Each structure stands twice: as structure tokens, then as C-alpha cells.
Length: 376
Image (cartoon, rainbow, N blue to C red; front, side):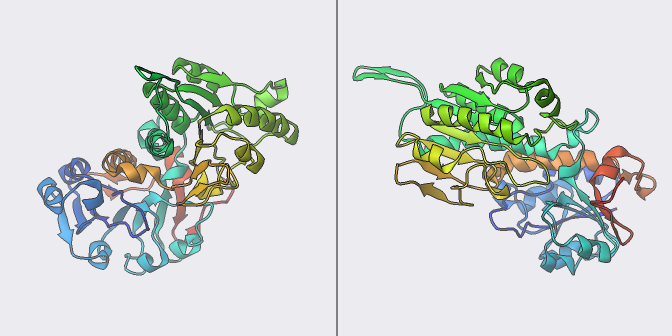
């Protein structure tokens, strides 16, 4: 199998879809790997390291993908990247399927396109779960970003000049990113509170030393709070009013707020209203991890730091895993290696088993047909 690893063209994308570790394994399985020159530089991987692992190096994108039967990418192909790809090839990437306007173009080129963010969150698929591996990094980096803009210490410090109180951190959303943010903030000495609509998150938050901020739920709300895949579900208007009042109270008392709430296929829920931001302390910091999906705060701006008249800083950087590119690439590349194990057979090459639940869930296009969005 001819496998291509292009350099990512998207702005601010520093990750790469394969590393020397995974390339060695592809080559050991009998595959040929061709990497675009410079693809790993932003992830601290030199061309020489890739060659040593067994890859060939191509001078540009077109030469990298022209003969490839399988493309491994971080971001889905753009319109400009599509033309050089061999008709009928397979592509594995983060495809942003709910917002990607090129799915029909992929189908027209007879591509088998797999969206890694659609891999089901099951025990069997854990080693392929790119959302978890990358969200873990995002939660960690969110706290470090907050410390960069927060004008005080995080831990309590007792000095000859007096005692410094610890920072109060509020984490909204206790999924993978939120839990890592809680753990990181606690390690830095902060007092941490966390909120999530899922009652099951309480035990996880408390196990990390955080205090769970809880909206009282009816029995019906408890049943509807979580999807079968473990994601938070959008709640009723009545619940949202109670939630907003509670979040407003705790956000105004916080020094740092980190928001992580996402709903697959929907805009990010608004958790922090402008009037709440107006009531936050001068010097407080809000890091909005949902900014690419509209943001958990309407005042957040993509890839900007906004400072309000009241001195609150809203940090809206996208792709936080890309700020920890070496480890983000290493984890992402392993996720892809595990996923390709479902597709690549040493004897038969590329084998598409659409009866496999992981393959069926992630396959967007096949044999000229757009599958995403169709009833399964």
C-alpha cells in the first residue's frame, strides 16, 4: 500500500499525521510511505528522522499524493488539495463533517474519506479516539494559557511581604478537556470548581480534587443529560435558566474560567453571557475552547485575545493541541495507526469492511456516494 503524509496547509496547523514511530510500523507491515518535505518540522520531526524511519521524502504536495492509495492527514483536503489526489484513493483525517462543504466533491472523485471525529466512543475504539487524545492536550494547554494572561499567582504563597491567595478556577464542561483542565489547575495550586450537565461527571470532578457545581435536576433531565456516546446533550429552556443563574454566580467569583462545552453537529452552547463577563473581576481570564464552534461566550473572538472595558481577558485561540505539536502529533499518529489496522491487511492490502461499526460510523464517502447524513 502506498501511503502519503502531506504537510498540512491549514493556517496555524502545526501537527502531522505520522511520526517516525508510526512510519516504522507501516513500513514493517510492508507499506511504502512518502512524506512531503517539511511536514514534521513544526512538530520537531526532521526529514532526516523520517527517512531513518523508512519514509521517502517528496518535494511538494502534488508529488507526495499523486500515486498514493491512502492519505493520512490532520485536516481534510481543501479544494486546492483535492485535484492532485488519485481518484479512488482513501483519505483519513479530521474532516469537520458538519461544516465541511466539500463532501460532495470527495464523493465525485470516488474517494473513501474517513472522519476521525466520528469514530464511536466505545471501549473497542478507545485507541483510535482522536477527540479524546487531542482534547486532553487542549485542556492542559488552556490552563497554561490562562496563567500567561492572569496577572497573579495560581497557588497560595506565603512570603515575608504577606500571603497570596490561590486563584479560583471555574471549568465549564467536565469531558476529557475539562477533566484535564481541572487536574492541571489543581497541580498548579488553584482552587477549582467545575460544572457539567451530566450528573455522572460529579464523581470524576471530585476524584481530581475539584468541587462539583450542580444544578438540581428532575428525573427526566437526568435521563436526557447525556447521549449514548457520552456527550452532553442540549437541555430544556427551563434548565438553561437555572444553569445560567448558577454559572453567573460562580463565574463572577472566579479568577479564571475555562469553557469546554461542545454538542456534536450543533453550535457551541452559550454558557457565559456578556452581562456575566461584565460582572467578573478585573484581571480575570476566560479561555474559550469552543471558539471554533461559535464559542461558549458571545464575546470570544477566534484567534484573538479580547480585553473588556472591565479588564477581563477573553482568550479565543483555536487548535490548542497545535500549540503542543510534538505530543499532539505523536498521539494523533498513534490513533491513525490503530485505525488503519481495520483497513490494511498484509496479504490483501486495503480492505473495506462496512459491517465494522467503527468503519461504518466514520466513512463519509464511498464509491461516488455521499454517506454522511444518511440513515444507517
